[in-house]
Length: 606
Image (tube, rainbow, N blue to C red):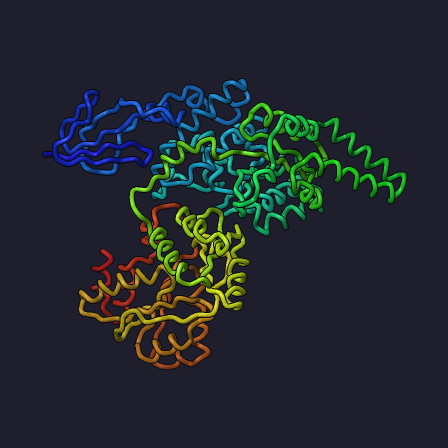
C-alpha cells in the first residue's frame, strides 16, 4: 500500500492510493512520490486538441509537498537577450521564435502564482514590437494593465526572481525603483495616458526629443480617466502615442461579432497608409490649404475627411478623432511585420500631435493552454457566494448583480449565464456602480454590488450600521474591514491571559455608526480602532466624533492602530501586516500596554 500524486505545472493532478498500475512506460519508487509530466510533452499536446498527452514523465522521490519537478525548455534566443535594445539585431523570423520562447517561459510561473494568463500571452508580440521599434529607456513606454507587463519584465531581465507576493520578490506592477525600463510606477489601471501626457509635456518644456508611448487595453479604457486624458491630450496637441490593445473584451457579451473591429488585408494596407509620413504630411497640407481658402471650406473638408476615415475604420473609431487623437488601425496584434511597420512610421512622425494605434489581440490563440492553467484544485469563497446568490435569485426576481472592476471573477459567469438580463457589468466604473446600485435599490430592486477590494477604493462607502461581535469589558477593539478578523485573533490571545475584551465590527466608515461608537466609549475604559488604512482614515474619523461629542472628556482613552506613514515593499499579506504592526499579536500587545501589563505585552511580541 502506498500513495502517489501525478501532476504537472498546469493545474491537473491525480492522486492514487493503494495498489495501482501507471503503465509500462512509467516506474514509481520511494512512495509517496510525485510524477510530473514534462513541459515539452504538454506543449506538444496543447498544439492540437485531438492529440493526447505524451506518456513521457519524470519520477521524483519527494515528500508530499506542493513542490514540483521542473524541466527547463530551451530558450536560445531569450537566453541571449540582456537588454531590449538587442531585439533590433533580430530578424522577423527570430522575433517570432522569441515570442514562442517567452510563452513557454511565462506559462509555468503564471500558473504557479495563479495570475491571469490569457492577457499576458496575447500581448507578447505587441511587447516585442514596441521594444524593437522604440529606444527604451530613453523612449518612455507606459503600461496600464498589470497583466500586459509580464513579457516586458521577461525582456528586462527581472523574471529570474520568480514573481510572487513574497518579501523582497519582484513586483508584479511597474516600479521605477525596480527598473529604468519602467517609466512610471503604477499598481492600477486607466492612468497610462494621463501619466504619458505629463511626460510628453515635460519633454516639450525641457526641449527633449524622446518618444512617449502609453499602452492601454480595452478593459481599462472604459474608465472615465482615460477619456479625460485623451481629451486633454487632443487639446494640448503634444506628440505622444497611445496603443489601444483591444483584446476583444466586451462589457456586452451578446454584441454581434460583426460589430467588432476585424482584421483583413484591406485594413492592414489602410493602417500602413494612415501611419505613413507621406499621407500624414499630405493631410496636414490639405488642412492648411483649406484654412487659407476660408473657414467654411476648412470645416467642409474636415467633415469629408472624418466621414471617409469613418467608412474605412471600425465602428467607433471617429470617437478618438473627436477627442483630438489621430486614429490608425486596426492592426493585427500578432503580426510582428505589420506591427513593426506601423510603429516605425508612427515613431518617425514629428509635430503631429497625439496618435492612437488600434491593435487587435486574440486571447483565444492560447485558449487550450489557458484552460489547463486555470483549472482550480478547490472551491473558492466566490464559488460558494455565487451559488448561494443564484439560489436566492431563482426565488426572488428583484435580485440583480452589478459588477465593476477590470476582470470578472469566473464564478460570476454562472449568474450571468443564468440571469443575463439581471447582470450588469459596468467595467472600471466603481463610482458609477455604487450610485447605479443605489438607483436600482430606490426603484424597488435588490442589487448586489460586487467590486474587488483593490477597486473599491475608487468608490465611496454608502448608508449602514456596525455590530458587536464579542461582548467583553474594559477594552473595546473596533475593527474596520479585514482587520476585524485580526481583532478576533487578538481576543483569543487575550482570553488565554485572562482578559475578556469586546470586539466590534464598524462595517462602514462613512456614515459612521455614532450610536455604536458612543456605546463602546460609555461602557469601556479603552477604545482601540484598528484599520488597514493610514493616518486620516477611519480612526481619525472616530477621533473627530468622540472629541466633538465630549466623550474624550470622560473616562475613555483612545488609541489608533493604522498603517505606518511610509511605503511597505512587496511581500506576502501576513508579512506586510507584521511590518505594519497590524497582526493579532500587535493588537493584543497594545491592549495589554493600556492596562499596565507591559511585561506581558513584550513577551507576547517576542
